[in-house]
Image (cartoon, rainbow, N blue to C red; front, side, top):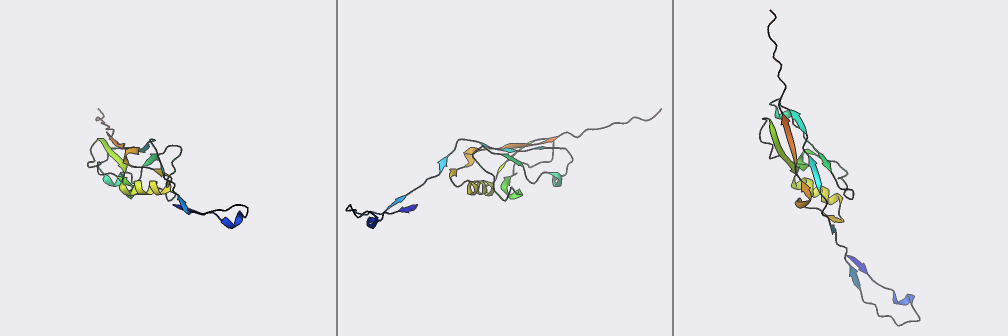
Length: 132
């Protein structure tokens, strides 16, 4: 809220009654989508090689947090296996709060976030036969 007042002394030719008011600026809502790109890796059975951050595609009027994204900004609870397959990755509550703080004039909520898929692809296998 922004207080709004007038100065009656600045208008000596008029009888001015000053009534204080306030101007409220409300954030705009957006229907644009924030898309998390889950990325891929080749199967290695090792969770330590999973990415800790992911690419986030933002609409043109939404800016990324200036501090960048960290591991805590993503919800990887859907990544519950190291087997070949696709697993959901989205913004966590912390990530959504960080994005909202960077865009104070726009309301962004979970309805604006499209989860990505982190995909583990099969590892290639090489079979070498004996020399005869």
